[in-house]
Image 1 (cartoon, helix red, strand yellow):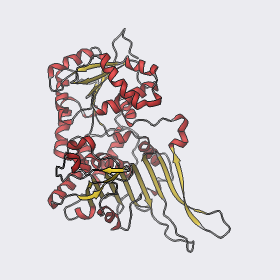
Image 2 (tube, helix red, strand yellow):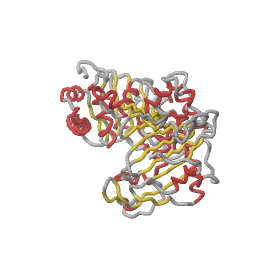
Image 3 (cartoon, helix red, strand yellow):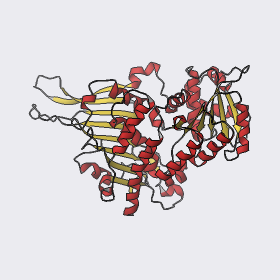
Length: 485
């Protein structure tokens, strides 16, 4: 809680404070950090947007959204403490003179985090105006939301704009998937246990599948989504980040650069997908009308009033990592909208035993499943003897680690942004994306998009409520594999 008798020494400024992300995620996350006593007593929270609000009116505005997100966990006493931190600055990001109000609010404040919850198109203006106002000094850092561009060229242009005002070590590029509890658990699973690492390679692992499936359509985001599509909106960041965490070498420690160096090595080892291979290693689709979440769902173009589009809403890719650890192991990436269920999971399929000593038994290869949503859990499929006297009859059984079951009484399902905001406030960039990492990801994605453009083909239609085009199943079946549903 801010002591008004003296100036606060730390601040976080959220640009785009009246936008959907800030209201649904950022302010509720800060409230929850307040409830757990994780915000320093001298932290000032400033919301900024073009709208005209008094401090009191803005506080009342965000209280509605915090209550909605907190539901039964809303505590009026906690809110009262948090509200005392909050100020508002009405600023047009393109107007340099408007930043004088922000300068006044930050008078005497030393360490400041600027969070750009805005369109990337105005990142450059905000950074330039912060620099002109003298607010981009050595004790400040900036957090920027994806997408960082829509291809390598625009990504580099945005990164150049950011670095006009902030050095690379003060730029925090956010991917909220890196804040999810189950993603953090993947790091712990790999590097805090001895029995997986000797098997974590092409000698023991047959294939890896990473799926992010959504039941919703594009809804009110059609104009944005139609410019980016599934490959730029989901594959370039979320799916490739998960792939990196699965495939990277053990870092020397959890120092930010140690972790991010290993992720960059994975991205640079991704085999390019050429025009000659594009039809065999990728599938893209666009949902048509069908059944979504139990009711009739319109097609993608119908959601834009019938406007024709070649933007994909589904993509499946066979990625290959050309290094010693993963040579010959296919990584299947899949994401889409209007699919049958909402789920995000990583499946590590181990190889079959080299020789069975159990006549007539159908042995299932071991499989590790890491679920990120809707539930957060880790499951391991093992073969086990059935409790009978009829000989060695086997069946597969799962060993499951459910975070809800293990920590249910003391655990609240956190918003991923809580961890990321806390790390940004603590100046720890481990969970954020470095410039060379974002650009390496775009290099690989641009190769795929270029091959699609050269082929001149349009996305294959699929019915809403299905698992995408039939070609997605052929993608895995070419290697004798199937998607795990």
